[in-house]
Length: 203
Image 1 (spheres, rainbow, N blue to C red):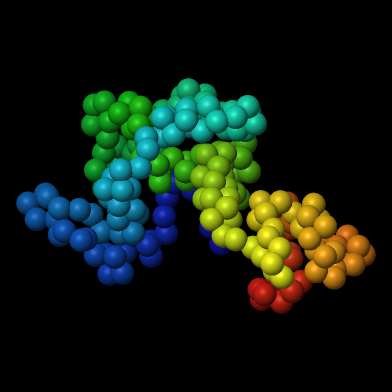
Image 2 (cartoon, rainbow, N blue to C red):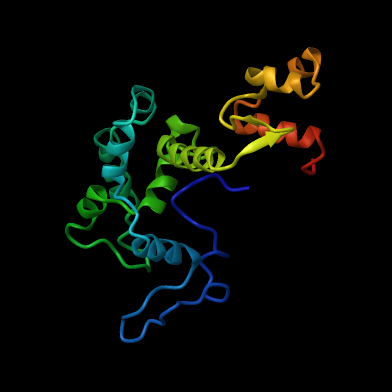
């Protein structure tokens, strides 16, 4: 498996598998590859700009602001990375005057998520960084809140552990020992381990 980085394998950049949606004629149209499609779809989806999204998330709670650094703390590193990554001898289109500053001011969200994850302080590409993790967490929690969980006429809060809702479980006939034995799933690694133990995933 590949670590999360702001680059892509040759397969997903292949013109054979992912031809341009609008062929480049007279230097117009779009480029081949899945990454290009992601960037274009992000534009048409009208997603938030990275700095404004970070500001909005940090304003939600102290816990999030402590977990998610302000964009001003990340921007200098991104500027340096773009400058160091640019290859004047490369065959791809090169940055023109002001391009790096424009990207740093408002980077594409799909690109930034990969760049953030690649930073050494966030485990060097082994997992998502703070913004990517927050987006995934908010998506999962929103789906959980929209999904009712119930049995025998009793409802459960999907955002709380079953151990914390032992009363309804006992009304359904579950014994205290069985409730105490419910595994705590507090991370994605815990979830994978649980699914493997239940043979829901291949080892």
